[in-house]
Image 1 (cartoon, rainbow, N blue to C red):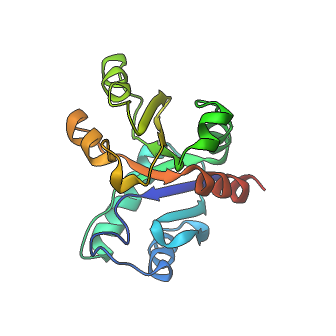
Image 2: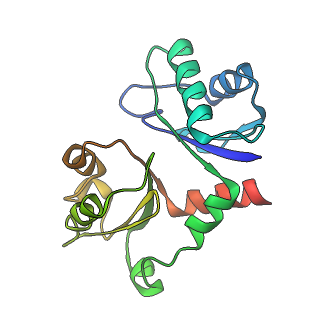
Length: 178
């Protein structure tokens, strides 16, 4: 089974790690065919089919032991990534006219009340839509200018997430499924 681990807060805010080191950590816990894409904590690998929560826990523990900081992993299978990147949560015209579209990865689906809270952050430069275990974010201007930078969402909901540009998510999907 092929997976991607989206690692939160890698190579931002002084939390620097070389991709070679990440590959060593993953292979060190018995994961195979490990590769990284972009130096932002995207690790593709193969493993025996197991509940994602068990793999996430193994990865999180290995990172905490190997690095001076931890990182929360968010796992998705190739099939899940195909579904995520195929979603048309924003119209093609909206997406084309925006600065960027991001997918935010969560550990669990949001409750209807949490999803409503996320979508209430929409307005001005930002539009948010929740689908499955993802928050889709259309950012009309560069993200630092956004009034709803993802940290605000996390704080408000008391959840942890990590965001990737949809172009990166599509490239990962192609590698996982290609």
